[in-house]
Length: 84
Image (cartoon, rainbow, N blue to C red; front, side, top):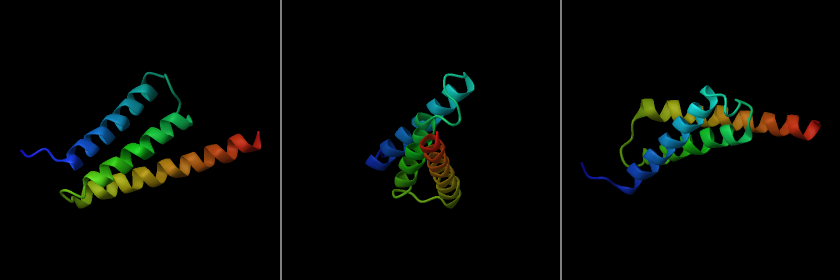
């Protein structure tokens, strides 16, 4: 296997998503926490970038929607925070 820059970027994204999920499950964060939502958004974005090297439609779709939903959560959280 030839490990490329895009593999590293994708692995970094996966680590971010998995660590965020672990922190959620161990109740060290909440699903509304900006850090949690940001880690998911950035992680998904990094995995999407990694698909530049070897495209996979299924992986693209999962990460695309993961990114969009995470960004939606960030926008909603910012609206909620600004209104209080």
